[in-house]
Length: 164
Image 1 (cartoon, rainbow, N blue to C red):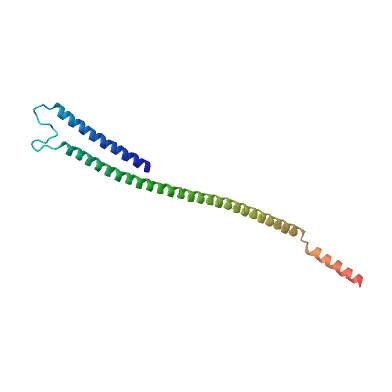
Image 2: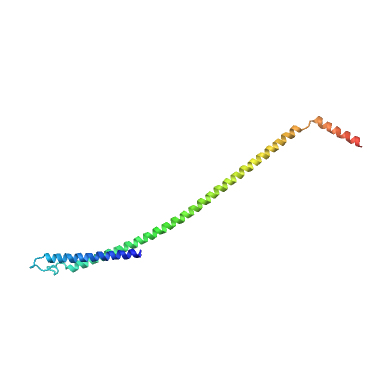
């Protein structure tokens, strides 16, 4: 920015110099085209404006333009600073959003793992229930009748009587 300020100042000074040179050339053209009997245009006649006043006015206008240009440069520098700050905030926001996205992806993966474990647990529970149901059915099938139980009791009593 410092180099651009120097370049702008140099350009403005060159513009002012060219304005002064143009005013001088205009003065010489006015004096060379005038008739020999008329007074030179550099000398005021009948309250005409002095050419040096024109040059001073041109310089004042150039100085005003330089002041305005400097104010515009300052405004552009402030705008650039604001844009840099906005860019920095955008980068920070992007970093935070990337981190949030990664956390969400990790959470989704963890939820998938939990769901898979839940499904495995349900499958194991169902297998255990099926095994218990099969055992209950087998036990119901093996259930002995009353007469078979009575026979077993009589065989036991006879064995006990023989052993005594």
